[in-house]
Amino acid sequence: MNPRHSALALLVAVLWGVNFVAIDLGLHPDGAEMPPLLFVAMRFTLVVIPCIFFIRKPDVSWQAVVGVGLLMSAGQFGLLYLAMALGMPAGLASLVLQAQVLLTVLLAAGFLGERPSRRQFAGVVLGVAGLAVVAVGRSLVAPVLPLIIVLAAALSWAAGNIVARKARAASGLSLVVWSGAVVPLPLLGLSLLVDGPAAVSQALVEVQPVTLLSALYTAVFGSLVGYGIWNRLLGLYPSSAVVPFTLLVPVVGMMTAWLVLGEVPSPADVTGGLLLLAGVATAVLGFGGRATRAGLAPGPRAQRRGEAGAERRAGDFADDLAADALDAGALAADVPPADDAGRLAAGNAARGAGTRAD
Image (tube, rainbow, N blue to C red; front, side, top):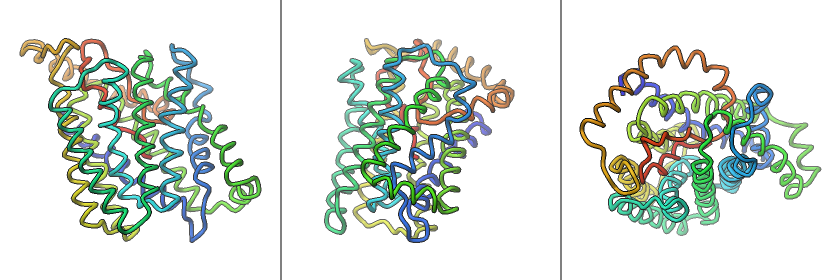
């Protein structure tokens, strides 16, 4: 990647890292409590409307649209917001959610037949060890339930990655918009059921400015701007050149939580987090090694052609990004565009990290 595009990828990592602190501030405005499921419904309402009226339905089945919406958007963010409302620190949440990369590798092996390489398997083992260290450390000082819920959010995100990958929509943008539309009504209904109509109506009437600002930040910067840039970079470069930047998300998230919220990670959090990130890095950085399911690596000539093509496409990046500014505003969830067949790799399922933390 050239320096300008690398800077854009770094910007996305910063936006997504800060996203977790924004969520925490919106959930706990001035000592009050915002119902988490209602908060997610608010976020996706801001993201989807009015864009859905200008974006056509993707060329996939309704089952795929609903599946991506329920798993990648409603499931992931509903569980993440719930865990943070129950006391999961924002910085630690940004770290643990990275487990979705490892879970995607495992699910892709089971449901898509994409057998992980030895390096990817080693990354999964290392990441699981890191999560175990974090879990043991958390259990000694705080309830472990929020940690389990964040892991469930990561699993939901990973499952959504598999559904989106199987759907292979021609337009990743339209799949994002229409699948995001699945979120508001179900989560509003769940909030009414769990929190009660009185609590929901009171929260809407007495909504705090910090909660509105948080919802706007997560919708605009976390989803729209972040994924507008991210999906464009994935269209210009191989996933192996883009996805590693997501390793910076928990670094930014934990540093921002320390500076803004005063969260100081424990030694167990730091040790386990380093192991988890090492596992994710091992898995992600290893997914470019196979060009087909048969395990054949691309030759030097094919690699040079791919790099040359990426550079030609990169030359039009600025113009394309400006032309897609309105379309990027419809991005609502963590759904990277489908890879073309020439870049299919056994570990490409790990590319879901990029995803929304949100």
